[in-house]
View 1 (tube, helix red, strand yellow):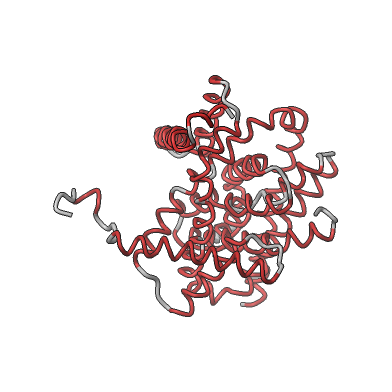
View 2 (view 1 turned 135 degrees about the horizontal axis):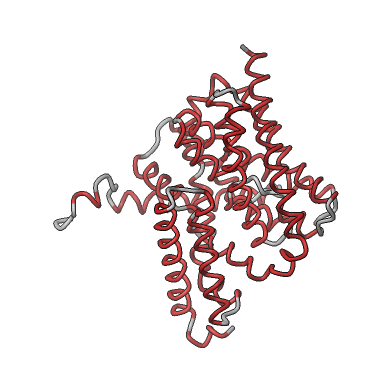
Length: 236
Length: 130
């Protein structure tokens, strides 16, 4: 670890500072590209940081040790997702059963189809462990993947790519939903987590609210079920 | 607060309230983690904390304004927090070279299937329950 002799506080300052800078640049580019999902701030920031680290010859472990404070905030950030869940609880009470059924079916298909297709196409076991949570919001997916002993970086990449695909497929989802905002919003939240939720909110508030519920509950349901399934598959 | 530049700080809750809500999030994370450890369930602690927080808010019946603000901030900038993990893709270049094409296919098809299943089930169940 090249940075250790600098002392961790200095390393943390450099790594967190670089991450914030890359994120700020990413946001600016995203706004300039008018919110095209290809230019999502996370993609841009990750790309910039990887390029910078490779150019400077800094190993990932050094960077991650410094950027750890930001990573550690994923925990409280996940807890904060309980707030939208509470806020929307009142509005979803009337449609509870269709919502619960569709959400569980969608979350199941998201994980099961990724595992089945991946297995058919001969993906390695570590890769399968890392993409099982691909439709779940990143902080929860990272927590699940840690538990499944997959690769966390690969999981984060798979989640981001899934969000991108979800946004690109959104017009198809709206058509399948017959312009029913609730159905489309829910599907975007379940299948494409935060990316889909942001897109649903842009189109209409009701769709956004259901997407937010879909996002939190898909995360919770997947986190509750996947580790137990992995246990049955002797993945532990 | 004398130099508060009105526009930039408008709607920001008092710092004491914000600190209290930050502490609350950490406490719920700790409670979730403790619950998971005690029950030996293989569920991530923060996810248990999220459900506990939603349950607590439901029991309390109202949302502290500072918590609403904080949660909004966190949701808007969630992407910042997963950048450090995402940069780890630089260690996965070999895997991406060998499995990348299959991965793209799997993730794309699976996402389409999941979203269409959700739409279809929702509409069927909605029609069935009236």
